Image (tube, rainbow, N blue to C red):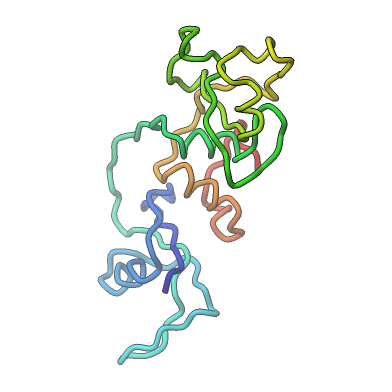
Length: 175
């Protein structure tokens, strides 16, 4: 039961991603309604067989403050789609590069950190990109969106055909 379910607020706003078992418990407790279920995954209980939910909607509105998108390695990787911003390669061994190196006064900020492969990071070292003949594919910037669910869950959820209908789209996120 390692499948995940998208949890929507009563106004259909995405709130969270939980495991399918937790979603089924919310349905049994009367806290949520099933909007979509996975017919391939059936759970047998004493009262019958049930398909595991993949999207549930809460019956009552949950008020949450707008979350703050934190600057972490994972969010920088997710923003850049795990793609080196210098050469365009996608590998499992990505690093974070300071566009303006720390020794030149660059800090840890959305507009100074990019996803970078090890080869490009070694080539650039602690120099400016133009000094070694490198150029950024696109300038780094803080994402304009702040989804309630984590950025990595949001990006993986955009690939789920059922969830895609419920997740908002943002112009600065590649599909």
